[in-house]
Image (cartoon, rainbow, N blue to C red):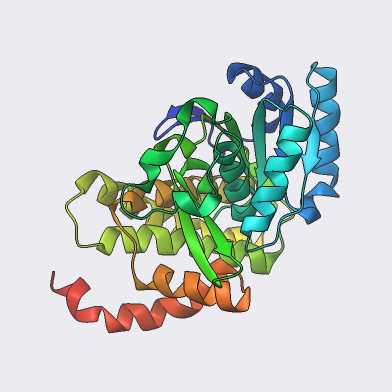
Length: 304
């Protein structure tokens, strides 16, 4: 069964196969008429982006594509995107892609309204209170993988190239105002990336469930997210054209990123550090680390 629906948790989500055709409507809904489309270099060359650009042109929206983004995005990528946004007087962001494009898109939306440097908004103490909220740009998020769930997150993970550290840039208003979640956009994702991003979704749900804090709402979401990964990731990997499996994996990804407000753990603490040092895929690192972290935490998670 292929699922569809309009959800409002934790933000407005238009979910279902074919919903990408509604991106122009999503932009208008957010008051955007001249969007900067932020995506990665691979997707920028794909038919998907050219078709979306043509469609937006037909629907009266002008658009420019920004794709200077690394797989583990850097502060330089964000700065370049801010320059592109200001240079052409854009009024909003379409962040289209996996976690890297979504994170950079959200960070650009934040930084176009700020006079201070990016690292001043790292998620430390009350740094988030320094943000000039009024000048932030609206963001429409369009995920093309099922893993990070960045489309429903209030933060971006950006690599500080000088310090060789991944840092979390945070503000509550970085949560995209509208998400267009079309599982058909994940068709064609290679098996190894489908598996790696799916394991990222599993790690989000799993670590959220085991985090030692009281948040029964997040726990319920995490349980459902883990169940969906168990039931549908093998099919999504082996039969990549299966839209039902792709749909449930996209829902599981959204569930994980919604649930981990309860907390994460050593998988992500280690994966972020290793990713900054070796520029390795985040989901793959979580998958490699998962059995070792679970074993190290066996006593705590079996006898809470």
